[in-house]
Length: 193
Image 1 (cartoon, rainbow, N blue to C red):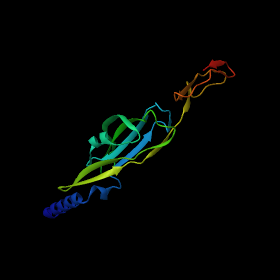
Image 2: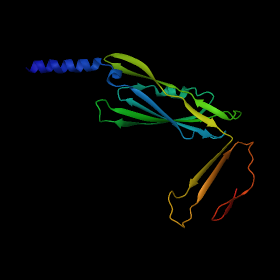
Image 3: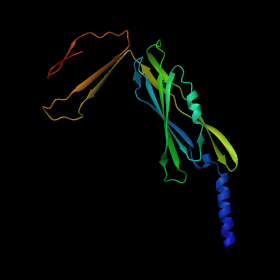
Image 4: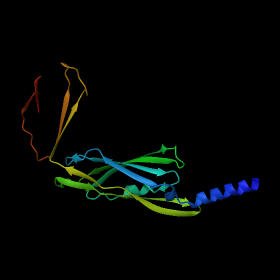
């Protein structure tokens, strides 16, 4: 009886090693991307954050990220975050790593729509003694270069009636855009640009 259970366990382990990781999960490596702003002014840097989620058995080729071609954008800097545990509840543990790309456009680029191109990340894993290689692909992200960009930030999210709140107005602009020196009027007071 003990031999039977021993062979049964041996058979189960052997079969589980033969099932490829992609057969156990839909996407062994996923690349989720986001930018800090979808609109930007020429000399602003674009912060592209990629969260790469992968199973522990997967070996992504991280060095390849330093060679990604983001043309027409220029890769100014890349920051590889630490490997972190994402999900331990399932049979296969998933990890993730945040990668931050600092991008810019050439100074002479014109205003208009641009797309941050998709990129691939190669990875490998072992199925038994055989190494299997594959790649995960990100999606392109559309952004827009504008001549002037205005952002507003309030000191407090909520105020009571009669309470003052400081509002910060930030104006990003191209060098060829000139602002007129005008007074901004509000009910409480005046402010100059």
